[in-house]
Image 1 (spheres, rainbow, N blue to C red):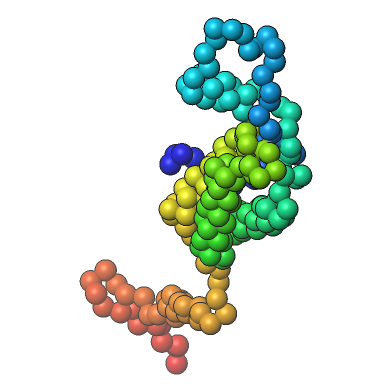
Image 2 (image 1 turned 180 degrees about the horizontal axis):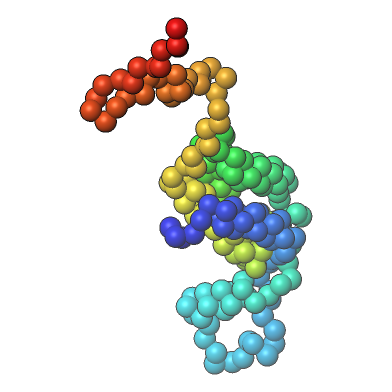
Length: 201
């Protein structure tokens, strides 16, 4: 993403912020489903490897579960507040006068959101029976990763140069006008001067 311009990175951040809002409306966690009689057959052995891949498949393919808005008590509010700061700081990076502090704020906020999502992805709410992850958590991980990557690219990119307008304290340079030669005495080709004619007596 080094070759992508600053405006494109800002657009990526804004789109990813909208994606995080959408991810909170999707299922983040779900309880482990009970095996059906068809799945429990005599002679079938379900080891830890088979259970891991079955659970991983459910996390990416099953859309049912508890959404982020209902699974969290305060994390969703914190994420929404950080999303607002992210949008404002991303737009502020387009203003040369405040570009540098806006980039610093944007980098820190996006890293904070990525850290929160990673923590919630690892620590599932097992106490209330929600032990499996769902699509919303993985989507949130992806979009926060995009925001953090784009913010890091903006942070290390060169700053825009402000166009310097005319200052009130700059004095204009006075240019002396060229000397007029209208009243100069004309000279002869030999270097002498031409005397004006004398009036008759």
